[in-house]
Every structure is written in C-alpha cells, then in structure tokens.
Amino acid sequence: MGLAELLFPPRCIFCREFLSAGSVCPRCAQSLPARGLVRRRHEFIDSAASPFVYDGPVRAAILRYKFRGRRAYAEGFAPFLARCVEEELGRDFDVVTWAPISARRLRERGFDQSELIARLTAEKLDLPIERLLRKTRDTKPNSSISGAARRRANVSGAYTAVDTARFRGAKVLLIDDILTTGATLSECARVLLTAGAGSVCAATLAAAPERR
Ligand SMILES: [Zn+2]
Image (cartoon, rainbow, N blue to C red; front, top):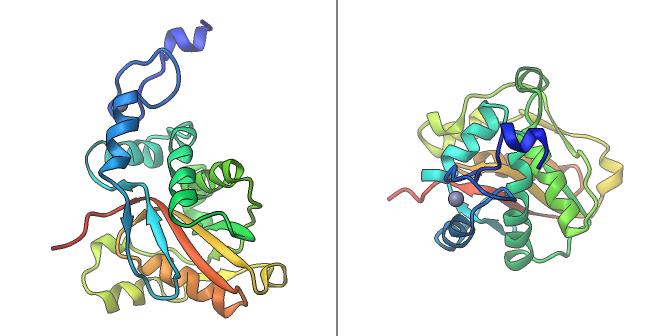
C-alpha cells in the first residue's frame, strides 16, 4: 500500500464506505443502476438513456465531483455510462462528443465535468471522441427555470458547432452529466443537426426524477 492509499484510503464514490480497492462498493454497483435507467423522448434526439436517477447518493456524488474537485470520480462513473450506452443505445456511432461548459466556467472549475466523463466513456466503448460544440455564453441552470419555453429560451444560441466539416452526416453520441429537462441536450442536438450531423443520440450519467 502506498502513502496515498494510507492517507486517502479508497472510498465508494456513492456511499463513502471504505474499500480495499476500486471506487464503487458492490452494494452500490448492484442497487443504484438497477433503479436508475431512464429513457425519455426529446426534441432533435433519436434516443436518450441514463444509468442513474439524479437523487440520493448519486446526486451527492455528482455534486462532490463537480463542486468539490473530485475529478477521479469520473473513472468510477464512466463504466456505468458506457454499459448503459452499449445496452440501451448500441455502439453504432461515428463520434462521441459532449455538452461543454463555457470558458469562464472552465476557468472557475478547472475541468469540464462532462468532457471528462465523455472521454473515459468513449475510451471504454472504443469510439472516437471530438469536441463538436463550444458554449459561447453562460446560462442559468435550467433546473431553476420553470416552463419548457423559458428553459428553451435560456439555452437558445448558447452553443455553436466547431469543425463542422469533420462530422457531416455522422451518427453522434452526445454526452452530458445530468439531464434535468432535456432543453440543453435538445439545443445541442439542434445545433449539431443544423451543422450537418446525421443523427444524435444522448446519454447522461443521471437524469432528474420524472415530474409528477
Ligand atoms: Zn457504496
């Protein structure tokens, strides 16, 4: 055991239980995805899937990942997302990309949480990954805005496509961390399709519980 393990023994990223190795305990590995899988219809997106529901220990883990600098969590998250993509959406994609954060947010946070998850997921799926989108302005979190039209307006025009010649007609897999309303993913998909993509499927690590 190295010094790092002695000082920071590995813990389950979801329930924080101490582990001898790895990043997810067997109980969480079993129980969390089993009650998770979410599939929903979204404008401009052929199909979307998420292995987890965004609540409880999953929500807590994603918040630690995004706001408390736990970058290494991405390695714990990616296998779940890769398996979900493979089982629910297949592997027939030409390119994987992600819904990026703005340059300003990137400076604050130090890393793009969705890019990191997307890169590790693409690696597991053995698919190429490329930046196809840029976020050109900051937006409010869509979870804080009520009404579908207002949420669409909030993200409208916030993304532009880059290097469009490279993905003309391509089947794109779009990855994001959390699906709250679908407005962000739909806007990203709209921009990709307008720029020439052939189709867009989406996968997010977690999806907000369905509103009743
Ligand atoms: Zn656990």
